[in-house]
Length: 273
Image (cartoon, rainbow, N blue to C red; front, side):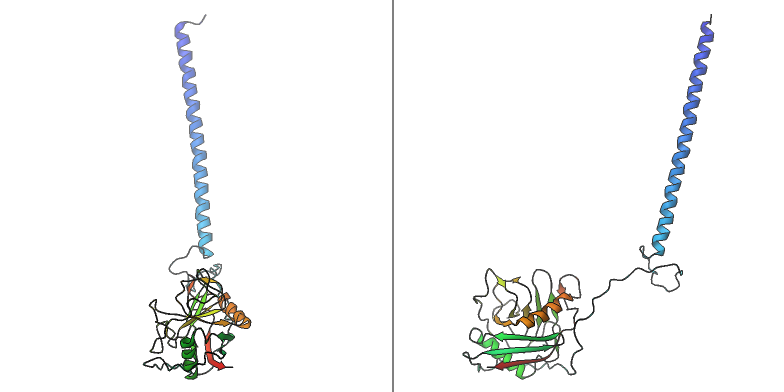
């Protein structure tokens, strides 16, 4: 028969063994955990080095030529090829006049304007009867070769969809020195404050009767307040030219900037028929 003292010692020994087993198991788990952590860290370090050498992680000197032969530089965004031709030889004319030219346009006649651009011809049927001051001004300026060799300086591709031209300085601040009155703001083509695709209208400063020489060509329906004189309609072939220019995008990537296409008006001509 086991004495009470022997039984106490046996229970103490079993408790000690259980404690030892738990400690051994804990150490084994700790070693496994540390091994896993080390492996993960190794993968991260190796992965980081791999990413760095392929150019995904970029530093200040990632453009230096002395990088290892195994380095693959990151690809820069490719720019679409310019869809337009080189501009014709010649210089822009930046003459200005003190007052609007005398109104000589024949309101009963048909007038057309041709913009011979580096991207193709844009033919426009002008609305002489509805916007006589505007058409008269364009007839005058075209006759003075005011638009020839000037760049179309602005393309918008977000919210409104227009190509803006008519500034010989190419800055968006130039003009002929005089202003013309707003006209035809209730044109039947303007519905629900939409300037439909194919419209050519005057740009202005936001103030009444502040139009000068700058104009915009709408290549896709655009919502705008009816405060920009609509004075013509672009032909079907002209719309194809505008689409080509629009498809090339603009320089900022933000929806409003200089066209990526080289859009230069080689010659502007207004014809009466």
